[in-house]
Image (cartoon, rainbow, N blue to C red; front, side, top):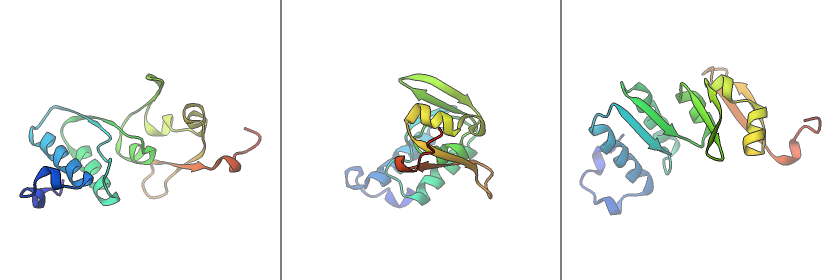
Amino acid sequence: MDATGLADRPFDRLSGGERQRVLIARALAQQPSLLVLDEPTNHLDVRHQLQVLGTLRKLPTTVLVALHDLNLAAYYCDRLYVLRDGRVTASGAPAEVLTSRLLEEVYGVASEVTVHPRTGAPQVTFLPAESRDPDQ
């Protein structure tokens, strides 16, 4: 978690991102068989977001993670569960779940979902309201 250099600093003197990395490191040190994380990339810069999710992906542990960044979820997660009003609206592999129609229904926003040419993962681009297709 890139937190070794933080060991001598008081927790209350750490930035939000540093605290987040320390808390995740603390959870990982327990070597759990199941890890449940709510927004583990919150307060993290892009480098640490990728590092944390990459580390979690490699663990021999079941990881259940809540993420609002759909592109990170599409790349790092095997299965997605989309919730609306506390109920599962869709579930499955990222390529099955992330569709423009679903994102419109659940979030009320227009989007384009393409396949990233290098990663092969779905990539969501949200569109401003004025660019919506009038035929949809």
